[in-house]
Image (cartoon, rainbow, N blue to C red; front, side, top):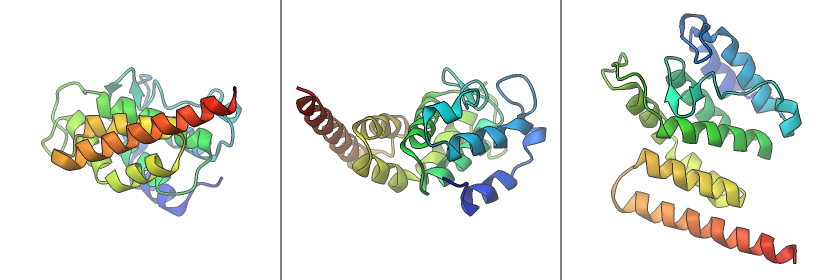
Length: 178
């Protein structure tokens, strides 16, 4: 897969060198990590290139995380290998569950809230992936939706729908292996 024009535009929108990375350096190397993950066809293609420890680390988030969510959502809106999609969804799940250092972001929101708000803008993209992707995708998207909490009946409905889809697909897969 190639890096889409939308992802390139979102990557170019940010001054990554001026942002802090979870690894302790500037986030200047984060666009390369994204490009490698997005173009990966298999998990092997991503060896040595992970977003974990850079844009998030065990649900801890940092300055480069908010712009990274925009890149993840742009990538998820396009075509990806199942490996790349899975890696980006897992990263988004950890970010959605995460909390920053408690400081305010330029919008005045806490960093975690800013990240969740950006991801919530792509709610329908996420639900679409959950409804058409693998059982793991459906389950991960249901978890993401729980953390994003769009509120009310909408959240409850889609979480239940996605979890049921994941359960059905998992049962079907288990029957094939018998």
